[in-house]
Amino acid sequence: MKMNRKALKALLSERRDLIEPEDHGLTRPSRQGRRAAGLSQQQVDELTGRAANTYYRLESGRYPNPPVDYLEQVGRLFGLNEQEWGCLCRYAGIGDPPYPLNPSSGLEIPGVWQEAVDGIAHPAYVNDASWNLIAHNAAFADLFPDSHVPANTMRWMLLDPRGRTMLTDWKAVWAPLVLPQLRAALALRPEDETLLKIAEDARADPDLAPLWESGGAHIHPDGDERPIHHALQGPGHVTMCAAMPLGAPGARLIVLIYHPGQKKQHTRLPMLRARRTT
Image (tube, rainbow, N blue to C red; front, side):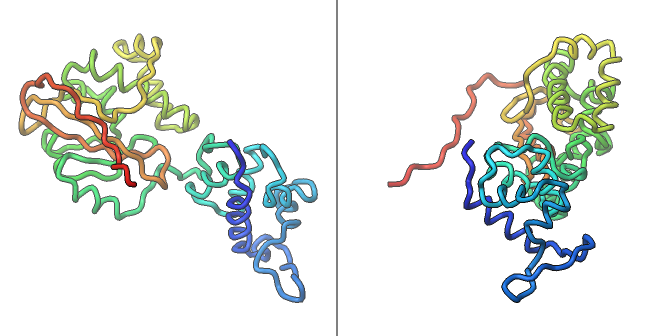
């Protein structure tokens, strides 16, 4: 991936100017007789423990293929959010970030998401990067007996006996497709205690252990159709639409389009594309 020097300089210099040197026990430098807006480039080297001019090379675009651990140091020092962290990695020429920058990333979303989910007519929910349920609408609650929604959707789909009953043909249709999603989540968050515990319990489960050992490559449900037993409407199937809140890597918005009764044989709807303009 090619470095974008102009965008890299704009991002870094803007964020550097927002950092108060005094907050790090440093003196604010002078610039042409005026107090500088924020940290100097030399102070960034000092705070990151790097050789002189390392940061100058990065901000000026003269540091090809900078190591990701250095970008992480700068990102944390500058207080970047996840979208800015992604931009930093791409502008520096290393591509998408290999991991989130902040420990809380993927575990929280802006509160307005609850209003957004409430405005969806179909059953819809948002889970965080650990697959804990953090927002859902009434239509989603209606899927479950007594509207008792699961605290963690991954654990519920794989290990809860109620989930195995509600998710029709669980062993053949659901489990082989959900387990690879757990693997993918762990690849993004290898130290996530919630996911590690689910994986441990899955490997100890007699039904899931063989599936875990066999692997699997299915990592997202977008567009999938699967059978389900609706608590109020009975047997049916759902078509899944999946998306990700941009500021929360690993979190997901899932919309379930429920169809009652036996699944009818039909071809999938064609892919949507923007109209070409002349």
